[in-house]
Image 1 (cartoon, rainbow, N blue to C red):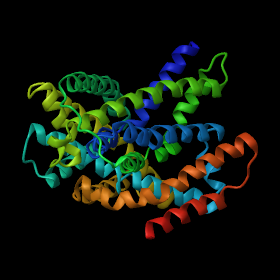
Image 2: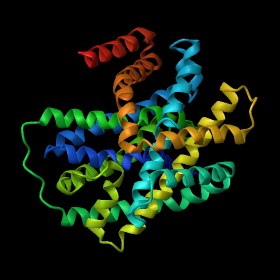
Image 3: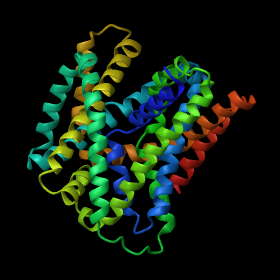
Image 4: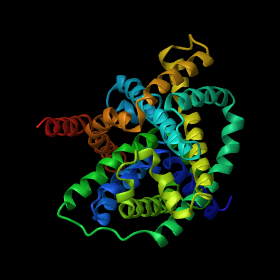
Length: 378
């Protein structure tokens, strides 16, 4: 494989890895809450939603994609407990349940009035069947869905920007808009995703770097992946700010579908909504598989069958999803806001360790966590 093709495919893979269900919601929410400060709010979400996750991939690259080696610097127990926490919050206690609620929000634009519990129960039953056969299903859906979703987003961007109302004049809340962008960037959980999902990208770069070093190939690939992600985020922030009045009374999971209806009309919007539903389900399959495998192998020590591990994962995800998107974020949001600064410090000091030999990591990580908790308590 030529170096340019390898770099391009890795960049697109990075974009796909970070662009999940929450990434369709949070930039719109940032725009809606920006009160006209689209530049500052965009800058905030680009910092924590783009720059920080790509630093996470860089850190994992320097550790050869070995999560055990990466987390063991915090102490031997951290390898298990951090993995359990991260996979739980990305799985049934967080992102998995959030995927179901976002899919429900899009589904309701096609079939209004569908109860969340009924949709969630049906989705979990379908997820069980798909996870059992994930190798065949996910590859097929991923090949079809990524282009479909990108085309749909491009259509929303072009028609939405062409016909969008004017953005209200900024008020005095510039700092609040920037902080909201920072906070919503946390909610994507993409730094956590970088720790666990970047291995296949790193292996791809190592195997196909040709005459380039792995680090050089990574930097070039990151420009592609981060560039695409940044463009999508900024466009969605602008759309969220422009359509803010009509989004005011909508739950977050229905915002993209509503903007699609306004931009594309009632006939084109169902295509976008179908793409969102399928994309969320594809992400949910991967997350269900990851957590159930960890539950079976690392927690239960392979004493339970795979089917029971999947059922347990989906049962938790079902009950959490009934809290709705806003309800899920009420308990996940404060957790992420508290731990994310510490995760960022851990990432930066891990890069410094491999680059400059800086060995200290526990103390600065603990200080970052303590300071954030102190400010939250004040």
